[in-house]
Length: 345
Ligand SMILES: Cc1ncc(COP(=O)(O)O)c(C=O)c1O
Image 1 (cartoon, rainbow, N blue to C red):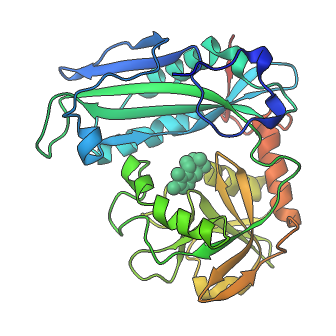
Image 2: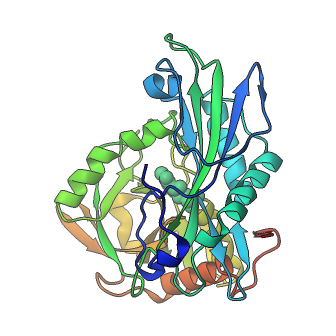
Image 3: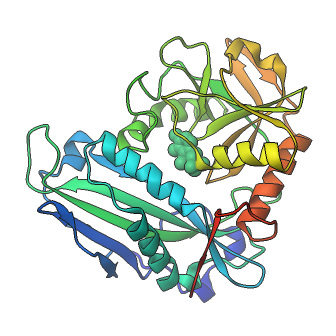
């Protein structure tokens, strides 16, 4: 395993989104019906049985969140309690033992604190990305829940998603579904992502940044934009995002719904977004932790490219939403109560 370079050797301005073996990660073990206390470890390799359910039957879920360096050098987390809660839901769906919120938050903070020198400096746009992961392990071969589980949180510094300003890209509508109508789409489980690799790769080959997934039952409504939630802005100052039980409840999405209403004075709506009614939108974008907002220039559907605001310029509402949320995450804009948790270093 290649160890991460020393913090002094990292080019913070040009970091991408790549795995790095940092000094510490958290690891807890579930056995005989309970979680142990877990601890920080320097060992980046998991040692598991070949019979582990995660390997055969996809009994695995994960999360993604970031730690941000503020102007005065503090480190803070953005709504980590929401990641803890969503992971518990994913665990319930796969018959895995939920990891309690208080322990989750303590573990996240201990990983950030022990790797604090790897939280990128303020102003570079970089962040410390955290990856909580739970897998079913232990000796097993039947299609049953695992006898044991591992919960780990590891971290790596990642660069600003957009170097040199936010830019729109085009998406294409997918023939594939990422989730079944009553399947696992609302859970952050590994299997959903294995199935998304082929559609994503075909979209890239065709010159698009990713796919728009339609609702699996009728293929008439937008569900997700790659591995992000979709939003559109209407002429009437509405912020609209799809509502469905087969999309992942994005923490960025719920934050933007709130900010659209409370900070931008828009009407925030969760409802149907029909693919043949894109004219109602003057701007559109994809929302998620990685990019915060990836503006959508246009969507290809049935061989027609529907352009929203522009294929090259970011719309004013999208830019304002982006600036407000990133401002909150980096500590420059006042956050709504309870959204920010400081990490004491
Ligand atoms: C399928 C999918 N949708 C949406 C999101 C965005 O969720 P969040 O804003 O919580 O990162 C993600 C990323 O976590 C995702 O994997």
